[in-house]
Image (cartoon, rainbow, N blue to C red; front, side, top):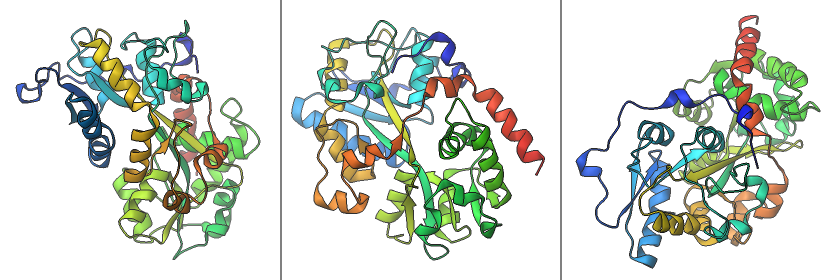
Length: 352
C-alpha cells in the first residue's frame, strides 16, 4: 500500500527524550537489537523469532522491551542504536513519511513476495520501508456468562437498547481509529464516509457502563462480567482463553472485523544493513509467523503459513478464510483525519 505525504499527519510528537541506550543494552559484537513492546509481545518475539533465528544463523538477536519503539526511533534519528523494531501500520506510515526509516528492494526481502502487496509498507518509488510479520483483528468480545455470541452477529447489535449499561468502550483516540472505521463499514459506508458509523457509535455509547482507560481494565471488565461485551482485540481474547478464561469469546460479526496489520522496520542509516535485511526477510517468512500464532494468536501474513488442526479449531477456520472476513481500510487516510475525528467523537460523547 502506497501513501503520499498528505495522507498522514499524526505521530511525530511521540519521540522520547532518551537519546541513547544504557551501556548494559548496547549491542555486543555481531548482535542485533530489536525494539519491542513489553509483556506478551516481547515474549512472542523472543520465542517465535529471535531465539530460532539465532539457532539457525548463529547471529544473536536481543529483544529490548520499550514502551514505544517508534519514540525510540525518532529520538535516535541520525544515530540509530536499534537495528529493528515493531510498530503499528500507522506508526510505520508516519515514520516512512518523515524519512526515519531505511528502505529495501524486494530482492533484499524476497519473502515479502509471499505477502499480499496491499499489506506492504511501500514508498512512492516502490521500495519497502518495512515488513509485515502478522495481523490481529478488532471484533466484539463477549462474556458468554452474560450474553450469547449470537447476540452480536452484527455490529449494529451494539446500539440495541437491551444492552443499556452492559457494554464497555475504549477511549476516543482509539474509537476514532478502530471503532468508527468498522462501524462505518457496517453502516454501509467506510473510512471516507463515516456518518452512519458515527450514529452507530453514538448508539453504542448510550449503552456503555464504563469507558476503559487501559487494556488491563478492559480485560478485567470482560473477565469479571462487569460488561457483557465490547469491541476488542483478537489477541487479547486469545491470551484470556489460553489462561483458562474460556467464557470470553471473540466474535466476527456478519459485516466482518477490522484487520490490524503490524510492521517491523529498520531505522534510517542502520548499522550492519545486509545483516538487518537478512533478519527482516526471516521475519517475513512463514515458519516464524506460524510460531507467533501458536504463542500469542497473531495471524501470519505470509500466504505460505499453514494452520495446524489445533489452531484451526481455535480460530474456527483456516487463515485464508479468516483473512477473507477482515476489512483492511486506508490507514493513511484515517491517520490524516484522526485529530478532527477525535474532536467530533469528543463532542458527540459530551452531548449524551
